[in-house]
Amino acid sequence: MNAIIKWWMTPKLPPEDIFDFPLLQNKSIFGKGFHLISHWLIHPFKRRLARRYLKLLQSYTKITVIGVTGSAGKSTTVQMIASILRQKGKTVATPPSIDPIFNVPNTILKCPPWTKFLILEMSVEYPGEMDFYLWLAKPDIGVITNIFPTHTEFLKDEEGVLKEKSKLTISLDESSFAVLNQDDKRLRNLARKIRARIIWFKADNAAAASSVGKLLGVSGDGISYGLKNYNRPKHRLEIKKHKSGAVILDDSYNSNPEAAILTVNYFNQLAKGEKIAVLGEMLELGGYEEEGHRKLGEVVAKSNFAVVIGVGEASKYLIDEINKNNQAIKTYLVSAEDEVFPILEPLISKKTYILIKGSRSIGLDKLVSRLSGY
View 1: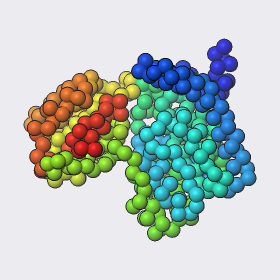
View 2 (view 1 turned 30 degrees about the horizontal axis):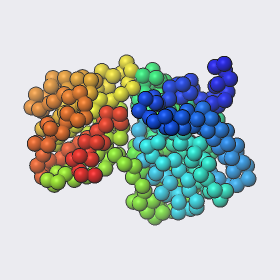
View 3 (view 1 turned 180 degrees about the vertical axis):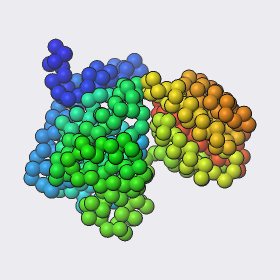
């Protein structure tokens, strides 16, 4: 029976994506019924339809398919590439903040026959998910932004993350292009396994997007225009204001240790006054949980914050590391997002700079909305 179910749901979809779908207890009877019909009937049909449709487009049109993966910066890179390529023709891209297992087929089906560029965010959480994306689509260009130990609860360790995400570029043939982060040693070592022509970029999302734009014939001015006018995903390095005039850096969409460290370093350059950080626990780290939080805590301790508020159970490692390394920082540890506001609000003045970052399910975006008024 399991084999039949797996075949119907699509051969390459990992079991976790078949059987571990969202709980239904908070839905109405109608909502439960619609959800079950969508999961077991509509989505499997859409996947097969999307696969066949894209094969048809690639056979009879000049559509270029670009796959983007990595541990951080995927959604931003996708939106930057899309903004750059729209100057060359019809461009369709996966919107940010939506589950890619369902979103990638939907995005493919939104392509009109005259689509010139299709950009797909290929985010992986479980082993085998990249195989599913590559079953759906055969990219002409594969982009890997970076490799960090994310989702290690399921992918085991950094090597597991690299193994799964690198399938994108390893799958490319000699006529394709792999766009890789030169600053990432793991990706430099990966190069020998790749048949495609490799284009290296330095460090950031804009450089990755610029490399793709240049490869596809966009002028320097066009690339600059695209980067200035891209659709920035919400809750990713957004600067907002508190009613007092305090500056809020909202990076509450998601978090992992390395991405959080990069955000702290960026915030240190941005902040010109007293600094406060609200840092939610980082989930799905598995055996890397304590080490990852302590690694972030060590960096935060050196960053001259006045106050740090840790949110969630695993943040105890973060707070402990800060206390061991810098007792001048006032620290708080709370269990949930709704406990932060009463602590934080009295500390804010017009000279305050506030960093807010954490895993999506911690809900720190609600705190941002309460502080900024929207």
